Image 1 (cartoon, rainbow, N blue to C red):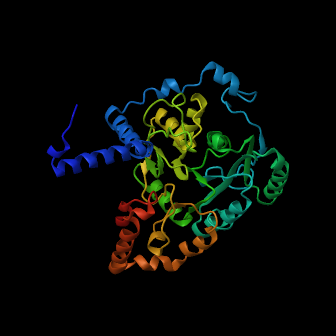
Image 2: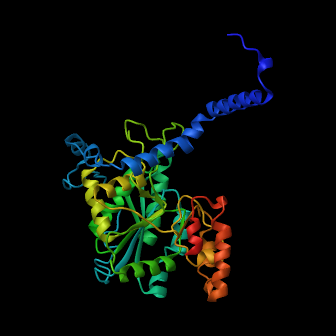
Image 3: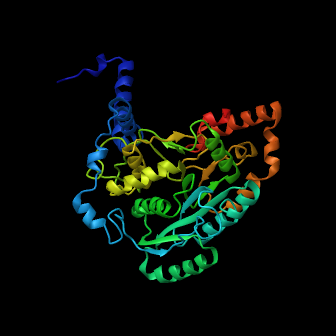
Length: 396
């Protein structure tokens, strides 16, 4: 069809060119748009309009073949029967002279075999059990969850160093599976199974990465408040909540999940695996769920969400639990901080600053409170600190 361009007005030409340019950009950037926008819109629609997760009880149930593949000689319930290479069954006080019901928190730190320096930094700072007892009169038990080094050439050397480390500190819990990203769910199951068997009396259970910073005084204060609340330490699962998150379908992504593993457009709500806390009764429910649900979902925090949904447990948002990001460095932040992610090298310096008694002087009184609110608005309500504390934390 012949088109007389002279009859087209100048503004129409601009409109046509603009439309063509936009279509070209969409075509070139479609993968990124689908990942960051379209998939999230589809996921939110599914999560909050359809809102049906009945499939979890059937699609993720362990079949007879799964049980044969995973079960071992210990018991029917030990579906992932990896032997312990390093273990401390008396860590929570069975033979240590302490009572059996006086553990406030069992804290599992997910670590990799070669991360000796990270573990030592944690022992010297927020993971120091003696500090918690002397300063806050609470018993916290900190242990490190590990598999074996994935590199066969380095495995023997690293394992020998780990045994020496464990002889010194007595806090490594290791099973005989490869310590890789795709075995994080195996590591999560190990934590809940160990906690159920050896430390079921703990009031709370926490899982954290070894590059996380935990403001232990603030955490203990918060847990005491939970214990003294009307509901008590029941049905608690708290952290940085991901709501209606979509599976990542890009094959080059570390978090890629294929359709045959998870065909639905939305995950159940879950907390960021960097650090979250559950009450003792929820830890028992998650343990029970791991016995009957298929653990093929290798993203551990998503698998945690699947287990919790199957058991009728929902996560609760806490504005001072970090997601995948690092919290701003400022005394007004330290006053309420509970966790911050991404601290592989600065744990000691942050511990000194965050626990300095002078920190609390900044927010005292009306003017101090006003000052810190203004500071937190500037720090938290800007996109620079994405995925740490929400803007709502500025007014908490």
